[in-house]
Length: 107
Image: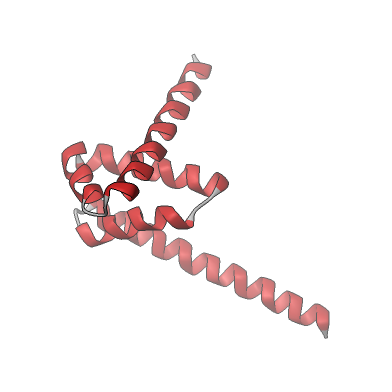
């Protein structure tokens, strides 16, 4: 019985992760279309990530900033407060540095 509960728990976690993945992708698509609320949600989501997921998320934010334009992205980021803005900027700078380093390794 315990094994069944563990399996059910793992299955639930997998299903929840899949739902979150779909929601995350939908938020990215909406932000790319210029929906400010979706961009705000993605920026706030930054606080919920850590480790490798944070770096992946930073790359998404970096790409969104490039896609939407720095001015528009930064205006939305600023609306979240100086603390959040600084964290987001630092995260994007880290992603940019790692991206540049990766490109340098490929040459």
